[in-house]
Length: 228
Length: 132
Image (cartoon, rainbow over all chains, first blue to last red; front, side, top):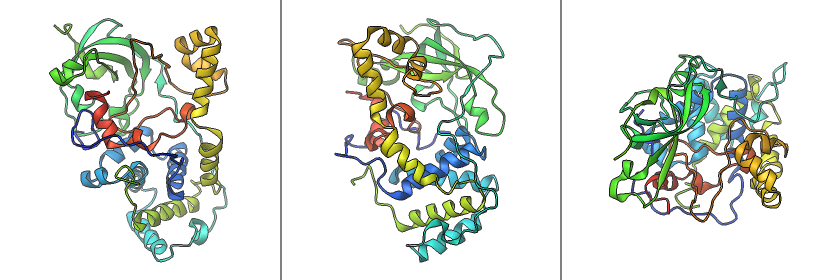
């Protein structure tokens, strides 16, 4: 989707600021969001692509004024409600309960389940799959990215659409996020590293000798002619 | 704090605790999960994992060749598990920058959790058009 999350190449966000002596987590609730994400994804309640698309559908103004773990919280809650794991009403009720009791730990109101939760995986499920067809392109082939604007999830950034590039490497066949985020299956596709001359995206504004490498799935690509 | 780390209102903390308690109750979230997350990323897994691989490559040309040719295999030698990762080398003529403009993908197992600047809108917006 052409959402506010697709930030590549935009102006106006100011300088990149480094925080001195930055802690791993800035608050305990951030670690809790991380744990919730790992546990709910390991349990198979949703997949990585559904999670990312959940975040992308945040209110755009809220997205820009909030940070990483608040993005996650919003995306996870959206997907868990959509999947019926929790209801919007029980989440609101429980939120109001803790808002009124700021010192109550999460376990304070919980009747612990008879069966303890399974341990979770630290890494996302591998995305590589056996190829179902030979790859359409090989390293060195010129390609042009399709000018697509799907309303759903895609990993083809807006600044890289309709651009000429060259296949740099083939990563094998991988789960296709554009279908996997929408319950339409894994539909593995060849995944390539595609090299672009930055002038193809940004013209004279590009820096000299700048190349941009983007990992792109085969359905994003058409055969192309080399850049001039 | 600054704009990269906006002040979070109490609603967010309450909502996290709400979700946490609902998932504890439904047997999805293990009771020790938050402690394990903190332990893993504050003590066990951080940028030093990647630094160890680089230091070994500096000392050992064979390892460096393996790290560049088969990054996953070379990291596995150090006990680091990763699904898909490719190590690249900076040279006097090539400087590599990594950005995820669409979310904030980062090699957690090798470098730990990303710093704030890497996840900031400013970095994600700027890198493709103005990387230096």
